[in-house]
Structures are given as structure tokens and as C-alpha cells.
Length: 372
Image (cartoon, rainbow, N blue to C red; front, side):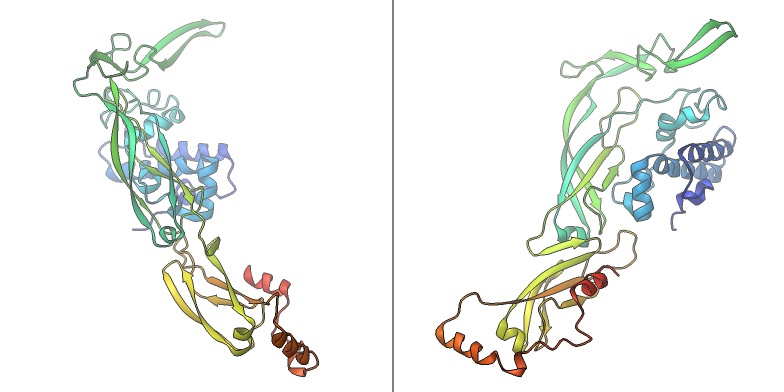
């Protein structure tokens, strides 16, 4: 089933401001909140859907990528953009938006334990280099990642300061009366648990560094600088916390013969003067292997041959770009006596006089066609 548009989910336009996006999300989140709709799977799905939309649209960088590439900008790595949502993610990141509507943002029906907000581990960031062929066809990469995990043998106990809630309440006397505020527990860091026992090779939080091979599915059509997310493959959190995410930045490796421009590719084809006069066939590179193309007799330097569908697939699934072959007639810089005499004789030959036709477009018209 196709994913719904994020703007449609929140009931806003693309021009909505940050405050309008937040207001729209809060309205939807309260409407479909688990505490308000107990045992209602449809409401739970809409609650997660609204959180997914807000997670993207509230971030300027993610919003820009979504506006340009749609849902496929976040595919291949799971996470909010890939459908791997859970309640812990939502409440750990956006619980403050609910304010006091549900007891400070906690929830009761999904393992939260009376308002406890589980701590999330830190995110990890890596860079993955891809060839143009890998970008064109999509690829699955197996990457070794060093991440913090809970050390075997580590045990935890309920925090005596916050009694396992992860929060402490303070009452302050002001000129307006007594005000009650809640904040993460400074002893357990909001986890609701403290270390009971830990092995010698664990850090103060009961974690240790381990190397793990992570499989990352990268969709076809990604662009340099795009970031994918693999949910739960960042650093683990202590106690009953949830793991952070692995953020994968895409880096495109320059191709030896092809240059990318959006979904289109460009190739410079050089032909000799005799080949341009008589016509020829040439083998050229594409992202799916080599192909042979025909160069018509009398081809002019600057001619652009368009191979439709031989470019990069659109990240939005709108087909493929084209491969634009730029023909360059190579003029020899030195000639022997016989060759020089031949061309001197041709100076007055009518066949060698320039006779541009209406179909022979100017340089500026060719550039215009390339971008149309």
C-alpha cells in the first residue's frame, strides 16, 4: 500500500510554517493518542503515521529532501522514513509536544510504566561511497560498525531517586503561587534505572564497544549528500532504553567517462575527421555496460545524441533519465606534406564550405534543449 503524503496526513499545505506544522501534529497526536484510544489499532496506526510525518517535516533538512524526492528519500534504511516506527521512538523524541495533556507526555498502554520515558542511545554516523553503477542499479552494502552495546553480565536496579519513573518533580513557590515542574532524573539520566553490577570491561553506563556487520539496502537514484537511516543500529542505551540509529551519508564516486546531472548522464565522444565525414559506429560506456551507437556521416562537432532511459532512475520512481552523448570532431594539430596539400586543395572546394541548415542548432539552443 502506498504511503500517504506527509502534508496530507497533518492536514497542512507545503507552505506551512514550523509553528503550524507543530500545531497540526499536536492536534493529530492528541486525537489518536493511545491513552485516549485504548486497544484501538487504527488509532495507533494513525498516531504513528502523524509522528512519522512530523519527524520529517519538523526538520528543515529532511523536509527539503522530502519536498524534492518524496518518500524514497528515506528508503533503504528503515527508521521513520522506512516504516520502522515504535512508540518508544515517538515519546522519547516528541513527548514534550503533548504538554500536560497526558501527564507530561508519558503513556500507559505500551510498556512505558506509568509515564516513564525510555532513554534512547546516541546515533552513529557513517559515510558510504557508491559508484555511479551502484547508484543506478541500487545496492546492498554490508558495513562493519563499532557501536556501544550492553556488556554481558551488566544488571540494573530501580533508581531510588525517581523510583523508576525517570523524572523528578519539583515544587517552587512564586509570586503567582506554587508551581510544579518535572525534569529528567539527574541520577539515572531519565532511564529510571541505575547499575547494580557490571563487568570490568564496561563503562560507567554498563556499555562496551563491539563491532557488528550491518546490512544497508540503498535504493537506486540516491544523490550525493543524501542521508539514510537504519533504525536501532546506533549505540544502545543502558537498562531498558532503546538503541539509537545509524545515519548513512551517501558519497558519489566520480566516474571515469560519465558525468551526472540530476537523473541525466553526459558522455564526451571524440571522433576523427574522417569518421565524421564518412560515418562510423562507436562503443561507449553506460551504467549498465557498454553499448554501440551509430554516428551518421557528416556529423557536426557539438551534435548531441540522446539515448533515452540510459540515465539514472528517479528516486521518486518517475522513470529514468537519459544519456546525452556529446560528439566532438577531433581536428589534427599536425599534418604531413601530403595531408596538408590535400586540405589546401579543399579550401576552395564547395563541399568543405560551411552550410549550416535550420536543423543545425546553435550552441545556446543545444544547451536549452539539454535542460528542457
